[in-house]
Amino acid sequence: MALLSKCSEYILEAGCDEAGRGCLAGPVVAAAVILPENFQHPLLNDSKQVSKKHRDELKPYIIENALAWAVGICSPLEIDEINILNASILAMHKALDQLKIKPEFIAVDGNRFKKYHDIPHATQIKGDARFLNIAAASILAKTFRDEIMENLHLEFPQFAWHSNMGYPTIAHRNAIREFGTTIHHRMTFQLLPRQMKLDL
Image (cartoon, rainbow, N blue to C red):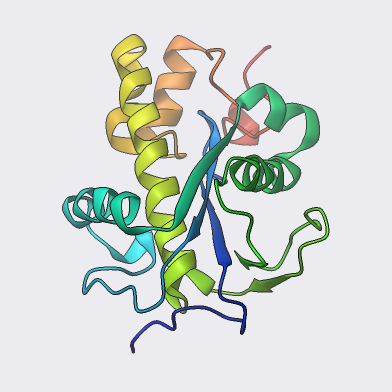
């Protein structure tokens, strides 16, 4: 099914999405994207439905053709301080803060958001698979976050963040068990199963 260009009648609608909510390590990264009318790309979809190769193709295309785009980041420390939901929303607000064009409307993937200034918004369940601007935001959030995790992998190769991106894989949890935690781990998350808790 073809994705819709936007979810409102406003011309300058920003799509917002985040990446990394379910990870044990690394930041949560959000993107905001305003696309031009008639924007299309045959590969554009929810980032989870797009291969890494195609995400890497889409990233520069979106950046070059969007009317405006920006990325916002919340660190593991911020996540631990305000919780992952609030950090995800804050990262979206940080992305919106950086847009060179003020949006008239904000379309947000998911079902939770906090009002951003005086701009109307709507949350969209599975919006990244329904609307082009949210799908574009999901691609940018995912690719920028993956790049961060690939760089962190160079510093902490024992956790294989270049492949698991900080998600709770068996290998990642085994590495936590063996090597302990880093400043990039989210200490309020359940890093290990309860019967194998770390002594922190």
